Length: 92
Image (cartoon, rainbow, N blue to C red; front, side, top):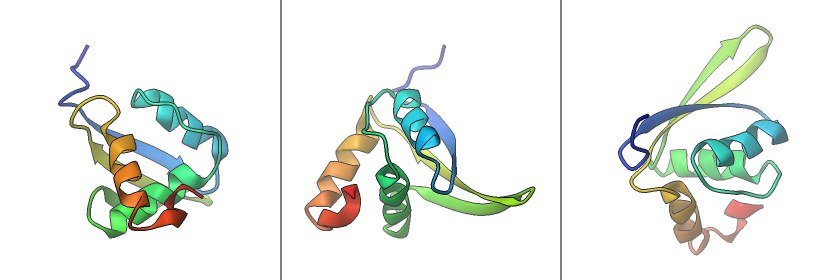
């Protein structure tokens, strides 16, 4: 098993898919409330250059791929929380 402190993971999030957003939290070792705010937060972090975002089509559905490099367990949550101060709407 790879060490999560240095792991690079690719997360597929289907647009407006709450279950996928919840699964993302479990996959990277943090718990997030159920809801689209995870997807919104990742999009905003991508605009700030903190995560890599790639749009691609998959069948009829458009899929967003976020490449997130974790530095320590729960690091993405810390990044989201840090940027909530700059953008209070990030967790909505």
